[in-house]
Image 1 (tube, helix red, strand yellow):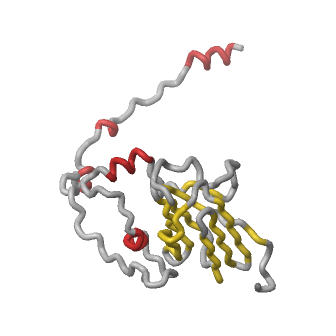
Image 2 (image 1 turned 90 degrees about the vertical axis):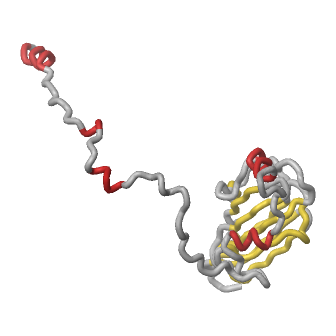
Image 3 (image 1 turned 45 degrees about the vertical axis):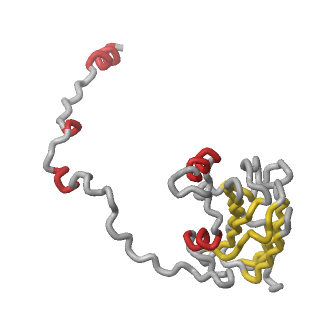
Length: 200
């Protein structure tokens, strides 16, 4: 351990879930010498970043399937875990076994979906929920730290965006008058109050 390393800190963790998956992101960049130990009921994550030791101990609300879970470096910065729940079912009411609030755990609203939204998606035209973790990681930017899973590379241009032909030409907007552009009348001076104060 380097000499300049300070006490052990709990990293900020973002989480979201589906009926069969839990997403965890350890929001510390460039973790050196990470140690990950995932068990059926717990996750231990240790590492050093910016001369600080970080350690995360999580006891899950319910058991998970460690063999089908994956983790690695997301977007070349943060550690991300896609944890397969042991049993598919309703959303967990919380991530942790213990119900007390912890300052380091926050909802990841970028990945969060309500249970109702997920049911609609599963019953949609593509069906089936999508348990292909490898493609899920690739869609999220690749995991440079996982063996056999290279990053996503350049995304290139976005090409034409369909459905944009119906929008008005913004260059024409200056030529048309808008009803909000009408000249407002001048304000009238309130002489009633002025007369009362002068006579006092």
